[in-house]
Length: 76
Image 1 (cartoon, rainbow, N blue to C red):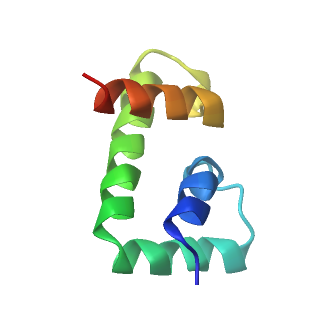
Image 2 (cartoon, one colour):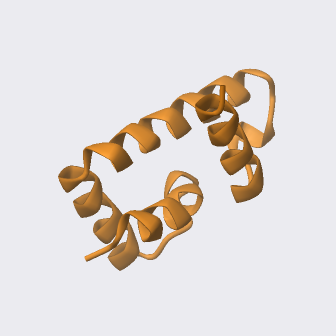
Image 3 (spheres, rainbow, N blue to C red):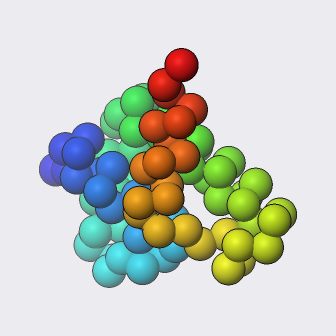
C-alpha cells in the first residue's frame, strides 16, 4: 500500500501515464481510499488542463513545476 508521500511523488508520472501497470494500480487504489490525495490529484489535473490551454507540451509539466504551483496555491 502506498503512503500519501509515495502517491505525491508519483503524481506527475501517473498523470503523464509514465508508470508501469503495478504502480498505476497502486496509485488508483490509494486515491480511492484517501480524500486528501484525491483532492491533490484533482488540483493537478486542473493545473495540467489550464497549462494545456497555454500550449505547454500537451499539458505535461515537471515535478518541480507541479510542486511549485501546488505550494503557491496553498501559501497565502
